[in-house]
Length: 268
Image (cartoon, rainbow, N blue to C red; front, top):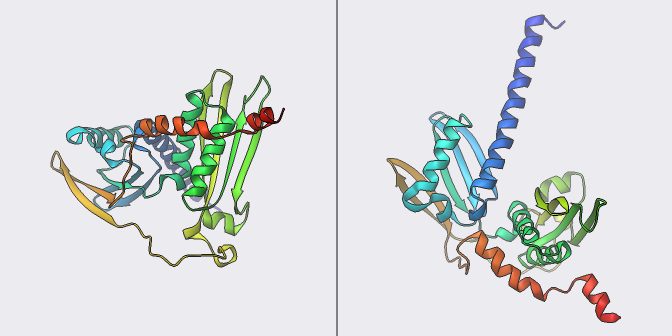
């Protein structure tokens, strides 16, 4: 028999869990917008005896840190005041392959559509980039006011991608982004299966036994007496300094992609 005070305790625990999950969702939305140009992928948050450890996974750590630590200082203050994180300690980690991060690719594809790129051209380009960078499979679902007043959706898939069950939970990562267009709101969902997470059933038949594990370097910088860890990938070269420049460079390269509509026009 459940006593009334035990039921009350269970209800308060559920409310706290819902509140914490809601705050984490708001925090993720804030980080996605605040450090979007740094190529934000995701954040890991863990409570420690001395405070809260926050690991930010980005493509360009320098943009997060900012000039003389101004960027990291603003984020730390925001996490402490608005999101009530106790003594936040931030670690900035550079992503080795941004093209295998669903969050980064969702943001890039959304930016291309915002710039006026046709959604199918942006989809084909994103598929190509993900597969060329070593993904086992990728699926892109785009929905909303794509071509007219009526809502529609399209799915585009390449490679091997488990759809459901234990395998999908083990090797597939996904994320969702939304973009506003003159026609209305468009949703983008990208699911990526990574080779390094694959299980024996999905192993590729041809493999090269090369050690391509990226070497990392950990640096510590001091911002107003507080130490911030920065984990960078050694030897990584990128012609763009920010995600905005990446979008501009890709927009030029994307013109070489031939869409289905253009192929049909050429056959007439």
